Length: 88
Image 1 (spheres, rainbow, N blue to C red):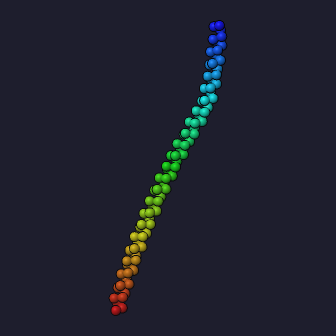
Image 2 (image 1 turned 60 degrees about the horizontal axis):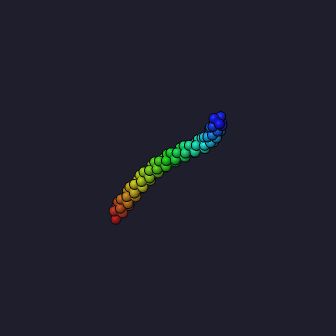
Image 3 (image 1 turned 45 degrees about the vertical axis):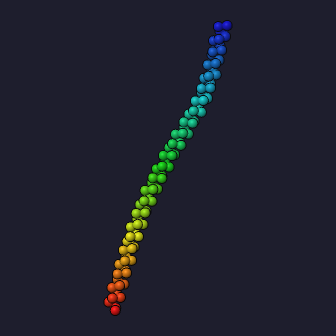
């Protein structure tokens, strides 16, 4: 009877080790997927920051261009007025 318990214990240990081994591969796969998702999220965050920075630079250039355009328009208007005053 004592040998029966030993054999039963060995069989139970065998099944537990098989279950543990199969679950370990599933656990590793889930951990790998989680790590990939985290890396992908970080890369996406970097892309968003880069896009925001580039958009800010573009906005600054457009604002500078528009300001210069307004100054040129103002200068042209002043020149027109001066020309009209000289003609009259």
